[in-house]
Image (cartoon, rainbow, N blue to C red):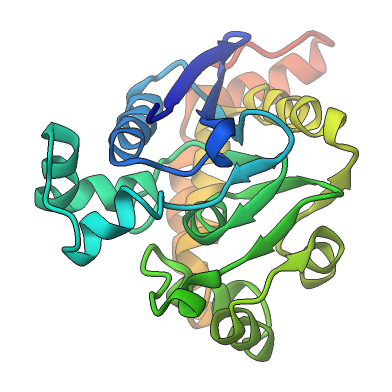
Length: 270
């Protein structure tokens, strides 16, 4: 069984994407990577989706990375492509980029509900999300170097930007796992909860974000991400661009008006 990617709607504006292969710790087969890329593209294109939650099935693992018997041998050349998914993964560079949220802007705020072990490609995918809620029993890590491989789906570039350099180098070069408590201390996740509350909390946050003005939310997210690491004057320029976009929108007029009229706002996303 090569697993499935489920995509469903929670309420009007929240999309849930779930990696479903619990018998293999939600390891990603080529078929699943293709389906994951398609799911990310679909939610980005869907104008009704204002926030996304990404999680895995069960409570043992969020995602343990690429399948070591299927995906990694394909990538190293140890296994020849056997079907359309294998060939797509090798021939279409964007499929791998999109499925790992690497060099691909999903546009919508994305929350990772880390329901269990988060390793290798799963860890790299998590680094591409905006907010992370983790189960308190989860483990994290990039074990690739222990298998003479490397984390090529974004971690070498992202991790040193998200944690102190020495921490990133320890994680990258030792390949040793670390606890959810350590991930919280390093700022890789924002909250730790018992396993049965993780998804509910992620959906709650997604609902709160989806209830805000979508033009403002996307502009704020874009300016914050694009401005990270830039000189202040360049980051301020991104803020100015965001300000012009948001303050001229219909939603920017609706928000204060709804407050003054003591009613729920009716945001249209324009």
